[in-house]
Image (cartoon, rainbow, N blue to C red; front, side, top):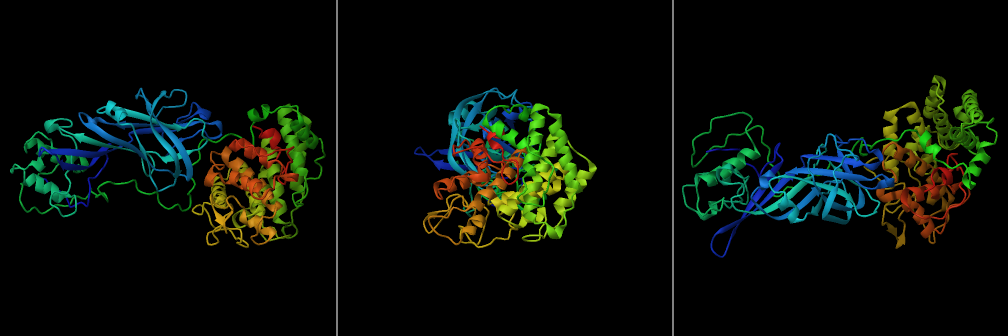
Length: 634
């Protein structure tokens, strides 16, 4: 007799593609026993293909993705080995995936044939076509740690029983939402759960993977039940007829032994002890019991230092690249506006004056020079960059808001025209890390981003990110990513902000930079409010005051999101599309559309979300780069 240590309630799945969770024995009217088996098949291959990167392969990624985010469609392909279903009758099936990013999603499950694709080389260009829809995920809240279960058409599984089965997860029509799921390389791989009403199931002594339920009635399905079955096979009891052939025989013994060996193969051959009625279990150091008869996917661990999912493919250029600029029109009102700025003098670059707009002039000159090949404008950009390095920035005389507003556009201009010197790099590093105390709080660009959850912090975050990318400082950039995610409301990413009055927070014990979806106070809709900027108007009151600091904070926020988007982070999607919700609240609740130097923001919001908020000629804004009616027009 084989003995394994006592387990708790279910079979183990160690290193195999399929495992049986249990057998339910049901007495029929004729007195025979019908069996319902539940099996789990873990994905044997999975990968994402992306239309925007049609030749790239993403087999090793820890996430698989389904979306059409920003016109870059993602389809997740999955493959399962269903050989253990050979000869069985499928009664139900469901796909179980674990979300890795919070959002509301809708998805289709599509049959894929042929199944010969391989995860190590599948791309958008060579992907197999998707076939009939075999499942649908209606509008569902995807939450990390909470698995999503999607029913699958039984006929599709039955068709491929005993074979390789492949499916794809894709978007529903033109819905613009993104489902991030753990891949098989991640913490919680995709699982296909199948229930069968089985007879011989794979045949006689070769097997099937069948495990008993609670034979001894102690409330546990465990190895004691195995032992009772093996010890009781000399009695002709019907409930031990596991293969359904009408008798208890060696084939039933083989089923139990095969199941135990498939679930937990021993690390090395050992001699099987002789059967006894009162066995003493011999512990096996490699076996770990699963926690329940029907295991669910384990929740993802609580994020710590790096909670943000890994980025997808980055786009070249901190702000824009040559090919994107070449696609810009050189006529029309938006181009004329850019030219009006480019024609101005850039002889007085000054990041210590928060109202100085030479940064916008330098950015405009850089953009025009790259688009048209105007070498004179390029020379003027470089002259301004060299001049600004010669101007001292005494920390005691300079306010951090000025540096946060002005620095980013100079760095982006340098990136656009290809200017790079060791002196400029050193100056940027020193400027980013210096503590300025001339006006307002004594902060550096970095600490301003990490402490101020308002317009100060969003502008500092923009400058921090572009400096990090220019200096190729990936370590600090990763920190900046988490700070922005935390500001949007993901408190598991970052919570180190110093908030002011909390009247406009939906939950004052868990303050955030943008109020969460669906939140309200005293029956009033505060979904999308920027509480630490709205508080500048005073305590909570209704109708809400039209507080301009909110729009200014959004200038820095959308700039950060755009930078992160280019680095492969879906920041516009984070926290239930927090930035779209913020702009929507300003329009629908505060009746406060953008004006003045905030008029660039609706253009980029409309581009990234497909919305239609009112627009007008774009201002370069406080950071000098907001010519979005030209650069971010849909």
